[in-house]
Amino acid sequence: MSEYSAHVDHFVQDHLPPREQWPELVYDLPDLRLPDRLNCAVELLDGWSAAGRGAAPCLITADTTWTFADLRERIDRIAHVLVEELGVRPGNRVMLLGYNSPMLLACWYAVVKAGAVAVTVVPSLRSRELAEVARRARVAFALCDHRLAGELRAAQRDSPLRTVLTWGGPLPQNLDGRMRAHPAAFEAVETAADDPCLIAFTSGSTGVPKAAVHTHREVLAVCRCFSGAALHPTPRDIFIGSPPIAFTFGLLALACYPVYVGASVVLLERAGPEELVAAIERHGATMCFSVPTVYRTWLRSGATERLSSLRVAISSAEPLPRATWLEFHQATGLELVNCLGSTEMLHAFMTTGTRAPRPGSVGRPVRGYRAVILGPDGQQLGDGEVGRLAVKGPSGCRYLDDPRQAEQVQGGWNLTGDLARRDPDGYYWVEGRRDDIIVSAGYNISAAEVEETLLEHPGVADCLVVPVPDAMRGQAAKAYVVPTPRVASNEDGARALQDFVRRRIAAYKCPREVEFIDALPRTATGKVARHRLKASARDAR
Image (cartoon, rainbow, N blue to C red; front, side):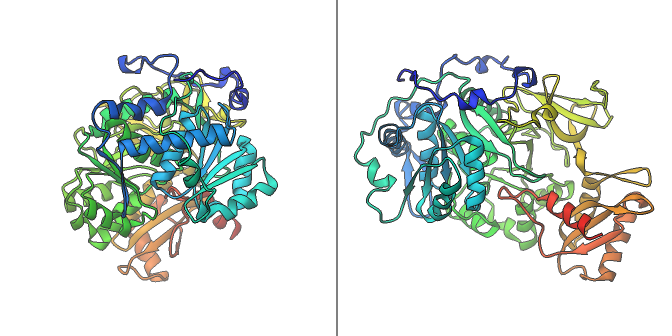
């Protein structure tokens, strides 16, 4: 690898939280004792050619396939463009804007290999949002799909962005054309293991997005921990999924794990439930990453009959209801692998993995991670007691210039925002989010419990329970319900759902209001944007 340049941009390191607010990072497993200097792009990819897999398929789309050798060649040519034409220096931030595609993945690896910091954003962002990302991360360079260039160029007017280079399209001076003028080999920048390599903005499901910083060491460590703990993949596996690479769930699942193990991955620009199941059929995919909403949609539409090639199905990004797990298992024979993770932790820190199923549980800590349940005073609670879930391991939360760091990390533990309990066998059960507890007439109501109960009704396709102000009780529970034809979208239907809830859980937990809607608002990762409906319910009073 090339020497780390003396002309390094230290903006990210200079704007991390103070050391006393950092989580404890744990690297005590033998395979996590990594060298002080490493570039994760090299560690993940470059060895496959030497191992004889250069000609093996790596990236697959509807109309093309790149081998491992193809991918490495394109990465190296892009890295030359970044360094020699655009002047990107180690530590500079480079924004990446595009649909899930081979070029987006190649650009991510090229940025990291050049010692810079990748800031990947979802295609749905508009110019004002892109400008805000650029301002917060001080981004001067951007690579993007030519179809999205309009919003990005508009963002240049009100941000530090000064260079935008597109791929695709007819322009002779775009990235595709410039790549061809450079050698097919690039000597990676010799970064330190603890140098930042990516800034991931949270999806904003609970409000203003936060910028989480992660390092080369963390990316490689998470690949080593999660692959063995939950997936046990082989080079014969074909990965596929719905999350965008712009978020860490998609980045690790579709851009890092398959490359790390020498497998192939199907990349979809559009990955709705129908597009995803059709691609699973067409390519014989074996390992699918998605969200509970997609699995429920397949159950309702009968698409589960088309999943015969899958051997592993992973659910993350939002709670997986017990009813969905059971119904999917009955329909397919597959045991959904439930995962709990976050952008702050880079990926999953809890999973059911391949252990004996406990429907509704999020399993045990991923290999390399530890978890405890904390009470209000910060003391660890015993089995069966509900408290704050706290974790630590080889990845952790470090926000870029954000006072919320002090709320997220305490005593070296990453506070996930979940309320949970541990059973005597060491399995963890999430009872809801700390901000999803509704206090009504002195009773604590878990919105997650009410939602899971509603989802057991055949007339409920999706739902969300939020607090609303109540003059007598302080707060009351309100349910937003996406109905199926099995329930009437009127007062009679609402009463039927309320009666259904009362027959299954305590009457005080029953939502006092039910509103039928066409769809729940969601972020680009598929998470429910709870804050939107909370605000809507509050403002309607």
